[in-house]
Image 1: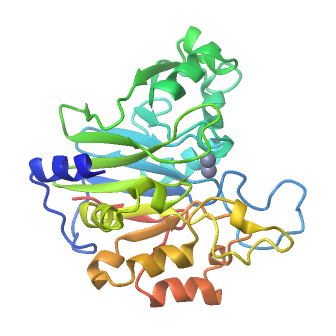
Image 2 (image 1 turned 45 degrees about the horizontal axis):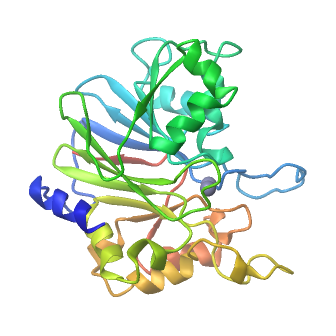
Image 3 (image 1 turned 60 degrees about the vertical axis):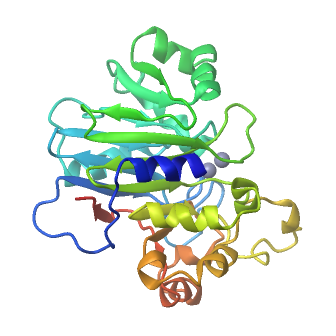
Length: 310
Ligand SMILES: [Zn+2]
Ligand SMILES: [Zn+2]
C-alpha cells in the first residue's frame, strides 16, 4: 500500500474534492451493479420484494479516446452492458475495450462466458488479470476456449505495477488484497484518470490484514482516490440470524465507518460502499441503516450512478 501512495505522489496527482465537476465529462465512471456476487433476489427467493441487486461492476468511459472499460465481468453482464449502452452507445460492436478482473468468484468473472461463441462471439477483448487469475483462465474450461478461439486476450497484470492504457490517458494499478483465494488471488484497483484517481476494492476479508495493522494505510487509500469504492458485503454482526458471523470475513460497513469517521467530511464523502449482500439493509435506500451511512457523511453506490473524473 505504501508503494501505491508513493507512486501517486510521484505522479503528481492532485485529488480534488468530489462534486467539483461541471460541463462535458471526458472520463466518467458508471456503476453497473452494487450487489454481492449472487445479487438479489437470490436463487430460490422469488418472493424477495426488496431492491433488485446486480453484482458489483464498474464501467469507465473515456470519451477522449472513445473507449469503454469494465471492472469485473458479472453474470449480469448482458443487462449491465445494455445499461452502459444507454449512457454511452458503443462505437463498434460490443464496445468493450478491456475488462479488469478482481478475482475468480462468481460475481466477478462469470460474465466472460457471454463473450464466447454461444453469445457475443467477441474478437480479442483484452482481459486484464493478475498471474493466478490469468493462469486459471488459460488452463480451465470454458475460459480456455475463449482464449483458444480468440474471443478474449488475457493480459497479465503485475501486483503493484502500472498498466498504461491509451498512451497513458489511463493507468491501472492493481494491488493484492486478502480474500478467500481458492482459484485466483484477489485484486483491488487504483485507476489514474487524467489528474485524478479512483479505487475499486469490492471484496476484501479484513482491513487489518490489508493494512497489516497500520490503520493510516486505509486513511491514505481514501485520501489518494477521488472516489473510493469499498467492500460493504455486511452491515454488522447481527445480519445473519443463527450464524456465528465471527467466522465470516469482510469488514462490516458500520465498523469501516467507525474507522474513518474522524476523517474530514470531504474525505468521507469519497467513500462509496459497494458489493452489499442481499441481507445488508443498506440495499434499501429508505432503510434506517442507509440513512445512517448518509448522515455519517459516506455514500452508497447504486446501479446507474455516474461520477465524472475530470
Ligand atoms: Zn464478491
Ligand atoms: Zn470474492
